[in-house]
Structures are given as structure tokens and as C-alpha cells.
Image (tube, rainbow, N blue to C red; front, top):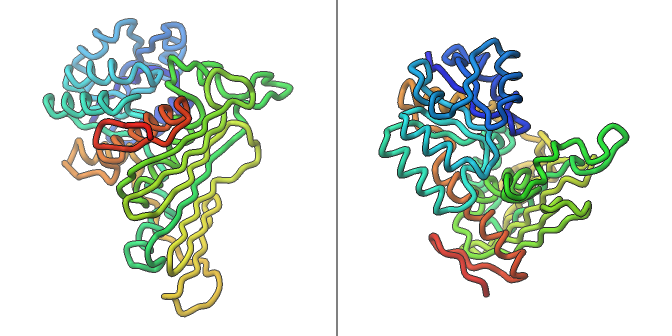
Length: 337
């Protein structure tokens, strides 16, 4: 049994992870800590577990083997390093950290203290992604030439019941979040296009606020890859009925994904026109992969490279938008051109 401490209810998905952990037969939630003590105490009471005011005391408890981190993004490095030092396994909501340097510091600490680290990147486990990945590997699209991935909802739009939008107000706090729509919703298109595109060499980003929030409520990033392919990444909080869209275009075919449906055209398939193929099964969730790694040493599908490159693109996109220039991507340093 993996005994887990829930570290903060700040993120909108904190309750989702608590529910998933509660349903996992290998996990037992034992304690809650929150940087907002009143919020944390309410959560602990709802779950019927202990509440701790002190993060240090929480991590020192003998009935804590692992932690689920849903703190403000800006606190990730501090909290995750403390958990690693206390030899607790770590599950976190994206992004892992705000800078690539901080990501590397986390990796170093995790290795030093021999604990498992997992970041929730759920669309890498989706049947549409799994099919598209296999189709590319089999050459059904030929050489990949362009990608478009879009994810948007209306969380920043005023409604009668939520005059400032249904997202919690702290999601527009730049100091806590490190950004807005791109770092939150845009994370999904970013890690997907990172997987499909390969080595990204440069990008240009435009990040703006239609609702005059202090962070971007919509953003577009154009990424260029070493292969010559390009990707257009779109994310926003200002479109109430916008579906998830993924387009993969190649020299020999195209894949179109809308929400959870996929169709393909390819010169390598016998049928002409659009085909709706049978999709593979859903892959295990990030939390299930984390548990399997802790218990059995199974290597997860979600990798450190996914975590690193997610932050790399976000960090460079902010630099690009602020400078109004294309950013060249090196291993760790970014330069404007």
C-alpha cells in the first residue's frame, strides 16, 4: 500500500486526483497539507483524513510514502524538492516547473534520493494519440510536414453565475501560475506536438488577453522542427464551444482528430477517401503508471523528456511573446533572432 499525502487543493484537478487515488487499490490517502490552511482543513474533513499545518511535519510522517502535488505552479520546485529530500515518491500536475533549469534541479534531487516522479500528461494515454503515433511510425503519413493542435474553453468568459469566468481567480495570478492559457491548457498541445515533431529548433509565440486579465487568455505558438516540419499550437480560455483539434499532415496522408474521434486518409491504405479506423485501448493513466513504477519498477510511458520539453517550449514562448521575436532553442539556452 502506498500511503499518500495530498499537497494542496489549489489546482482545479486536485479533486480528480484525490478521487482517482481513492479508487486505486494500491493507494491510501492519509493526510492533507495546503498552503491555505482553511482550504486544506475543509478538504481533510471531507476525506476523513488528518490535516497538517506544516509541510515539514507532513513529509516527516511515517505514514506518508508519496505525495500528490497540486500547489500553485510557482511552488512546484520548492515543494517537490522537499518531498524528494524526505524520500517521498512524487506525482504532480503539469507543468513540472517554470524553467528548464528548475526541471533539471528536480531530476537531480529525485535521482539522488531514489524516488519516483510522475507528471500528469493524460492525452499521451488517449487512443487517438496512440493510433496517430503508430500510424506515423508505420509511415502511413509519409514525412510529417505540419501539425496543428488546439485546445480552448470559456473559463475566462463572464457568465451570470460567474462574472469573472468559471475558472478560479488564482488561475489568472501570474506569480502563482507563471502564465495563463498556454501554460495551463496549452500544455496538452505542447507535449503532443513535442512527441510528433521531434527536435524543435525555434518558435514564435503571440500571447494576449482578450479579457484584460494579467495573464494570457489565448495564445498561438508556431514551432519549427529540425525535420523542416512546423506546428501551430493554440490554447485559450475565451471560446465556450471549441472542440479539441489535432491535425497531422504528411507527404502521403493526413490524420484529423476532433475530440475523441479520428479519421485518416493515406496513399498507403487500400480504401480511398476518409477512413475511421479502429482505435487501440486507452493506455494506463499517469497515476497508474506511477504506481506501477513504484511497486514493480515498470518504466512509464510518460518520460522525463516529456516533462523537460514541456517546460522548454513554455519558457521560450514567454520569451518570444515578450520580445516579439522568434526564439532559437538550444539544449538549455534560448536566444532571440
